[in-house]
Length: 271
Ligand SMILES: [Fe+2]
Image 1 (cartoon, protein in one colour):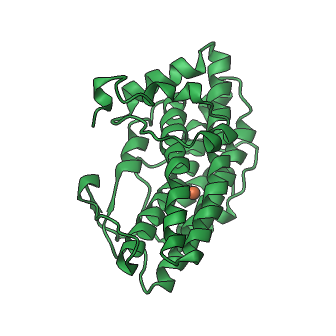
Image 2 (spheres, rainbow, N blue to C red; image 1 turned 90 degrees about the vertical axis):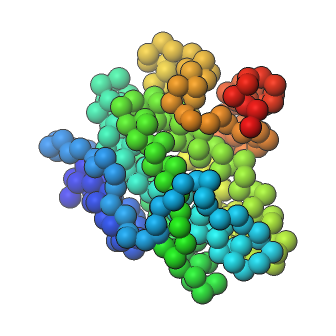
């Protein structure tokens, strides 16, 4: 199977086991292949039902129900992340090649990200099962795929919003969640989040590297370009407090996000 067909197989797999198995089996190869377009929406299991973010249940981690709600929300994010990685590869490899970038490396790196996202989903799904729950049993929100649809026309916009805003937000909040899970006595789930956190630094780093490479070939200033894309392509604003050490390890220095550190910087920040 060629790499384009392998990426499409992930996106078209509806079941979680089927999708994760396809992600882990996918290999980025080179060679001529007919073009294949990614679907506008990847296939997903019939459950969970999708709801508006504001209707998502609150999570109090002291109770088992609260931990299940958190792990369920994170599993949903990871399943979205599997699709996002293969969608970036399939949707934008030709744009990367046309820009003079190494499209084979581009595809290989996003395939590796997608494989790790599948491992994250399976880890969280295992934790849910250990707590007598399962993925799909609670509602989840569709914010991640909405962000993907809003950036379906531009690799630069997709890189700015998916890895550099949304995944970087994961770096900000995951260590605190792991601490709270450990404080509640759920050390297994805390360990899963620590593994996920370490991998996600690498995922943000992949995003930053390709974003900066594309800015370089187009003669764009990466920080200014990032700020402009966040303003024009993202509904919210990056929210402090930021995890400066984690972001720095991922190659994202404070000059990328310092403008959102000041709560008085812009009226839109006051929420
Ligand atoms: Fe992940």
